[in-house]
Length: 399
Ligand SMILES: [Zn+2]
Picture 1 (spheres, rainbow, N blue to C red):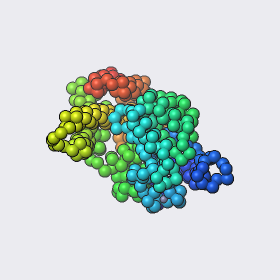
Picture 2 (cartoon, helix red, strand yellow; picture 1 turned 60 degrees about the horizontal axis):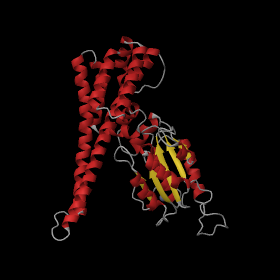
Picture 3 (cartoon, helix red, strand yellow; picture 1 turned 180 degrees about the vertical axis):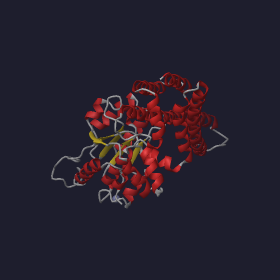
Picture 4 (spheres, rainbow, N blue to C red; picture 1 turned 135 degrees about the vertical axis):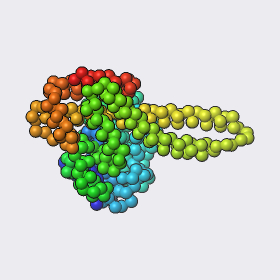
């Protein structure tokens, strides 16, 4: 199975990337026999992968990186392909934001390495996941390298869209765009069955309610808690008639996001603290320990700060997913109310959504959708989740 089999439901993008990988394989460098042409000529050094969340931007970028490093342009079975896809290839670096943003320090460290010659492969590749989380300074640092890349360096940036809110106009203008679309439910179900061994009925259901998000489909099919969280979110509209029920439902929503984030953090934070303690040589005594202790404390503080920022992000992501589910619900109610024949977001709630459409007006559904969008904006602007969700529930109740 070639690396492209992991890029789900994107035939156009895959064809484009395959052709680009074939062309890249013919590119010659200045230290090779290249008939006097400048090294790296004919290669596009910066790429921008865009597509809605869950469409597989970073998987597509990784598959392309594998195809560039693989002697067979992405066979899927050689060491190069396997290590790139696993994220352990020596000449493929990934910048993944763990907190709310990607710092300039993180970008500079990676760029320094990326400017060097590859150790074993043809290219030195940098994948930036969630490039929309680059700070302005980080974005400027990256721009310099994107403008004047070393002949063997390739940047693969991933972000939701080409909008200036997501990626700076100057970086955008120097990249070749690869656009991914929301994969069809059939394509998602097929990959869950074939790759993850999920039973067909579960896969079909999960693919139909995941909103085109492959990772979410896999989680819904596999993790009972994920299904329970979704049930809790979709119970909110039913609970709106009673104020007490509605606020209890919103508390449950915030609580579930907190619990999910805390569970994820607990498992990772402890490991990181232990690793740091080992690398600092925990428990050392003797000469020079005062200085060592000071830098150890600084390192511990730095780790704590990063963990805290990551916790905030995980919590916010979990809440955001809940809000997207809720928005999908009212979108379905609106579509039903207008008699529009569009694919529904929550086909397993068709009866309830039909009832809701009968009991309200399209105008009310639109106002509720707007309230959900306003809540997402408020969370993005650092409003406390409890306050933002309470305001949302009030707006949803008013209708
Ligand atoms: Zn290969």
